[in-house]
Image (cartoon, rainbow, N blue to C red; front, side, top):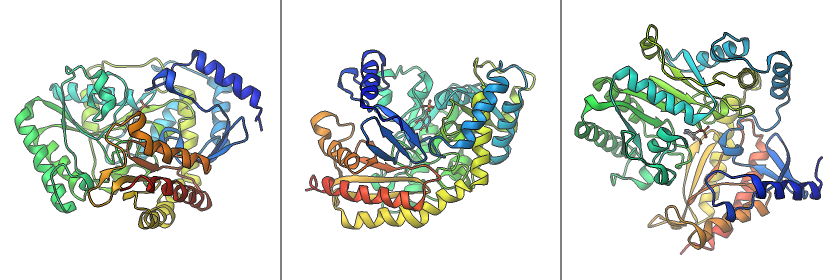
Length: 449
Ligand code: PLP
């Protein structure tokens, strides 16, 4: 509709002159100028359209420009565009009620933030104040956000440059059978060894010094590793035994991505705190938050909670959440995510793995899938080294370029590609994505031994 190449060139020129981008060497990037988006697709100013298999940064769970959510934001803007957080506001009250209705157990109080990192910061603050203890245990192969505490808790290279070593964070290994840190050969073995390793870590750190254990229910950017049966229940039991607050980070896995409202629903486990963002309103307006158990909320019944944000529970963001949750319920978006995973993406990706030697493992559920690309299936040597860049990353760069040439915008992280389309992706769209991946994997195959 607005595809005018000259406008695209101007948008790009102003971006390159003035926009400082996240996580990037500013002189080495070439951002695509986006003209528009609808549903599962977006397009540029030069007539190219892409099927978005990334959902932005894994957050547009209802796709782009859902008419009902856009209308709800417009309506809220006309009614009450903003209001300070100390007041009771209809959109905020209703968003909190709808979220609390869906969170597991007694996590019925919602502290709103502007995104995931702030949710993690506040969850950790609550855990420290509730327990009076300083330390936080978190997993390698994790991402929890870009702010000070959240990035220190993160277990991937994004932490390195900002690791101040004073945040009281201790990392441990969570289960991941395909690249087992414990040299296990079965899920049951991996689960038992990972729990023993966590117990040992706690024993040597001193249980009375540990405020919280934080885990992504299913780690996202780090590789979509569904924990083995019994692991999260085991962590819950360990936390109960030592009086440690159990935080599940559902910023990426929550709100439909796994084919359930929360990924915790698959494991029958109730944490003390859940952090959420992204899918809560598909990111149409920035929003995140912490869902808080009755016991932790009670800590702040008489004692003020020492944290806040000017835009906590912003009416536009909350109106978008109310509309998004209603759309997800009315249009059975969560059920669709589950069904697409079971009937289209799961079988389709496994079928690709059979034909392409570059695919080492397929894992996931719902619309949350990872393909581990390898040079050698036997040794499981990754297609590119951990944290590779430049020439060392050429194989993944070639794979990514082949996806785009075939009309698919891929999620690529290290040696993995993730198939993470919108939760309301259609069967035909998912199949179109699989066909593009098929072609691009043939390029990756050229880099295998
Ligand atoms: N936690 C998890 C699991 C995430 O995936 C992310 C973002 O990708 C964050 C936290 C940080 O969220 P935000 O970028 O909204 O601050």
